[in-house]
Amino acid sequence: MDTVNPDFTSLFAQLGLENDAAAIEQFINTHSLPAHQRIAEAPFWNAAQRTFIEEAITQDAQWAETIGHLDTALHQ
Image 1 (cartoon, rainbow, N blue to C red):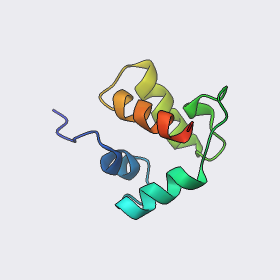
Image 2 (cartoon, rainbow, N blue to C red; image 1 turned 180 degrees about the vertical axis):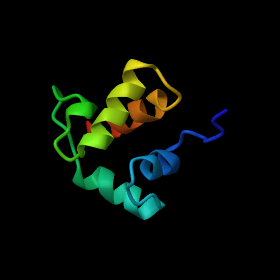
Image 3 (tube, one colour; image 1 turned 30 degrees about the vertical axis):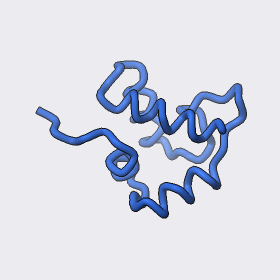
Image 4 (cartoon, rainbow, N blue to C red; image 1 turned 90 degrees about the horizontal axis):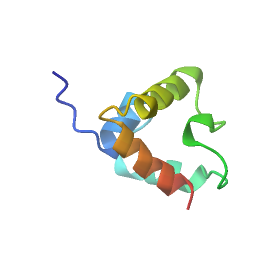
């Protein structure tokens, strides 16, 4: 049973990124996506990150909602 709370802190850790509040804010502020680009297709992900995001969305995994929130933040 997976007991990870799927919030931004946990998502960034899962993606292998710095996950403190300042690092998350900086990431969102420096990585934006054009309206037509899907989050999984963003050029700043490595192959493992891209696969994780795509699979989480496709399988509607516990991470899907948090990834959706990140997607919204990156499209603003």
